[in-house]
Image (tube, rainbow, N blue to C red):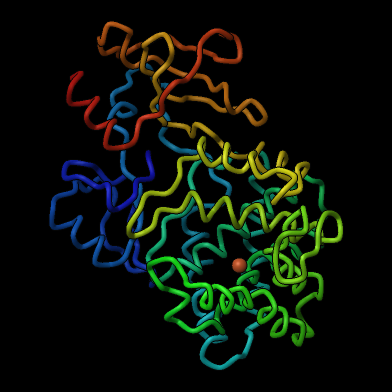
Length: 372
Ligand SMILES: [Fe+2]
């Protein structure tokens, strides 16, 4: 299964997972082979990505198939959370009222599921629509942050405070004029200034809610601060930034750069990993960043990669902390011959073998057609 940006969809690709609209309506079911009409419809609905099947995984014969990718939270949980957050944020936007119960309920069930699946790696991030971007993003930041909190050894109370802060981090955006918030192009200097008020606006709304721990409100206030003090809105730095906010800052940027948008594909996990690492010490707390990145599959399960040996292989196993060295199964040998029972390569043992390319879903279809 691969996540693919809607702009890169091609007829003939097969859907790997039900596709829902932001309102939770089923648009297309699993196993549908896409045609031009379907693709047009998905774009009209504002969906930025969907999951498609990997033709190579389906044809493996030795039972070593990857049919389910272990996930941090189930798709149903995610859809439910996005809907709840959508409604609750809409309420803030319309009435300035915060439905604290709904946010706390959502943060709690997301936390519970992340704890239950502790140890799972992040292979796929969620799909979302153009209109639902902020809501899907909030849920994703919540999941990624909570997972990091679990790794850092937080207790349940701390995890819930962190999850709630993460879910609410962009609350202040509900007070930013829509034309700035959803502007497709780059912002002007003035617009940027308005946008940069959102941490203060969010804090101002949240700190009045007695049901919301003050520490969670501080996440909203501090999530754009940077470790070297060059962030906004208070230019705080280092350990003066609360550790919850240091976590959320990392999850926020990671999710933003890996997200597909209506006009462009998101950055692939291995590129995102490099970008994030280059920001250690300046933007991010390096210790928390290392913990965060240890749970991200740089080469997610079911990815297809090319090796320096010329072989093309499928990623079949990823271990936390050793994500640059997954276990692979050869699907096309160095002479271009398709393998149905190709050799297994454990990159943690074969130290002179390297991944030199990761194939995009469109390139995988081409490989399939050319080597069949
Ligand atoms: Fe933000």
